[in-house]
Each structure stands twice: as structure tokens, then as C-alpha cells.
Length: 237
Image (cartoon, rainbow, N blue to C red):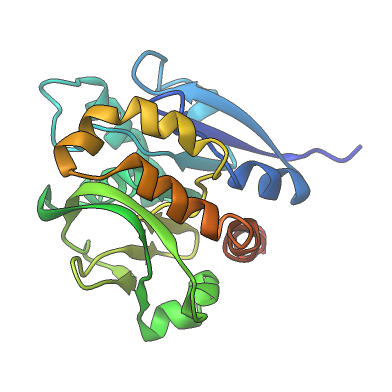
């Protein structure tokens, strides 16, 4: 009998989901279960011992532990997995929690990034799973106001004009992405509603963001497959 490798996904708000990453995991033979980080037991063995831990985004800061005490347990879980080299993917808030778990400062950035844009790969990034993002016209979704210092021992993979640390690798099996490659254009309608107050405060027009998403929609699944598919093969190897 063949057993699927199992991924546990830490979710902070229901509408920030696996998106385009879900079919990539399925095609690669991974089973998936979700853990709602704010309310479920993050010390449960099924979470701690998962073959892969995926930490998704959310509209809070990794440093807001007093307001959101569950973050303390979440950071501790991430720290333990990173210490022993267990596979992990962190996206947006997830990347910031990884940085915090590695002892780095996470803090409000000087500009809020919301919208589609490119990233600049480092030499290490160009030969990593992110290589597809070096192609002309490759775009990622930025949706964050916080940033972090590069952790000791981490390798910077991508940056842009606003922030030096847009992606990093740690060891052979941990990847942190400040941006979103998993965002499914169809599901972003839920983001527009769920983040309506943030969008208004940032002066971002939903109609313009929707139009930009529509123009890129056809290319996004292939980019997600290229990046996430290669990364999954690398951690399996």
C-alpha cells in the first residue's frame, strides 16, 4: 500500500486559503488537512509531526502576541520544526512568523504593498525554485504592510524596490515568501470583501486591482505549478 505524504496547513482567516497551491499539492500526491491557527491546538502531534507544514497569511502582525496570544504557540511550533529541518512553507504572515521564529525582528514597513508587481531574484534565487519569476512579465501579488530582517543562516532569494526581503530559504526544506503565488484569481473576490477596510485605508481601488488580476489570470496557474511543483520535488528528494 502506498501512503501519501501529508501536509498540515495553518490558516488564519478562512478566505486566505491554499488557492492555486491546492491542485499542485494534489498532483504531487500530497494529502492536506487544515488547522485553524487562532482556535485549534497547535501542540497536537498531528500538527507538529506533519510531513509538511504550510503557514498561510493573515491580517495581523507576527509581533502582536499580546493581542493574539496564539501566536506564541505558533512561533514555538515553527521554531521547533526549523530547528530539526522539517519541511515548511510560509506565505506572507507565514514568512514573517518564520523570521520571528528564527530570532529576527518583524516590524511595520515604510510602505504598504498591495497589488501585482515583479520581484528581483538574487543569484541564489535564480537557481532556486523561484527561477520562473525571472521571466519577463512574471508577476506576484503583494499584500502586506510588515517586513522583517533576514534571519541569521537564511539565504535571501528575492527583493524589490520597497523591501530587501521578499523571499528566503532556510536550510534545505524551508521556504518563506513575503508575496502571494498561491492567490487564485477567482477567490480574490473574497479578499476584496474581507480586506475592504484595509484597501480603502491604503487608497487601493478594487476595480483597478480586479482588472489587473484579470489580465494576469491565465498565466498564474503555470507560475504556481512551476515554483511550488519544483519546491515539492526538492523537499521530497
